[in-house]
Image (cartoon, rainbow, N blue to C red; front, top):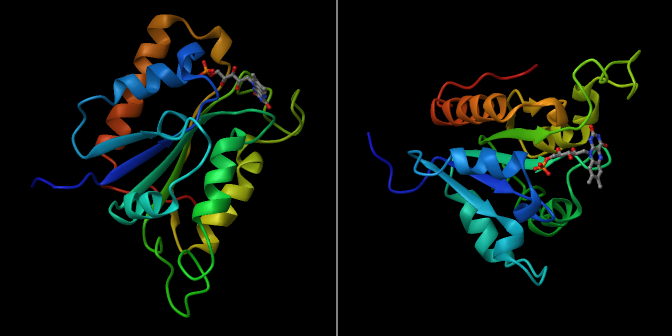
Length: 186
Ligand SMILES: Cc1cc2nc3c(=O)[nH]c(=O)nc-3n(C[C@H](O)[C@H](O)[C@H](O)COP(=O)(O)O)c2cc1C
């Protein structure tokens, strides 16, 4: 079955993708993948002024939305937060008197961290499980009636060899391409 529009949209935010090692490799691995499209938000909006109507149309057209970013201070970089603040407004995303525009779609986070897997635990260096760090986005998905899927998290990226990064990027592509079978997280 072919789709005229991509089924999955990756909203990519990186403050300087030209200096990125990890997120650039992840995005590059998606090139040419069927039914996937990447929106590099800072390339689309170098002046920071988001075309809200265009963004709404882009996310309305797909079934699955992925937020891809490097973790900066336990959160997405600021422009992705601005995107959420400006695009997800009352009367469209919620508060419509019925399902919002994104209800029924899936939401997945794909992110990278300097902190290692072991460091993200209550007794670890960062003091929290990474799933706790994602609660605001998980709550957003819930509020919008979206299905929250297992995040794709690359921890400890400073220790990743180029070969390991390449392998992870291929796994990312495979996961998103075969993402028609959702893996909801309770
Ligand atoms: C401003 C800034 C804040 C960061 N905050 C965190 C953090 O809170 N937790 C963490 O594990 N890593 C943190 N890091 C490390 C980044 O997550 C890491 O450099 C990034 O995932 C690498 O991806 P990239 O090669 O695409 O830039 C931070 C890095 C920067 C520059």
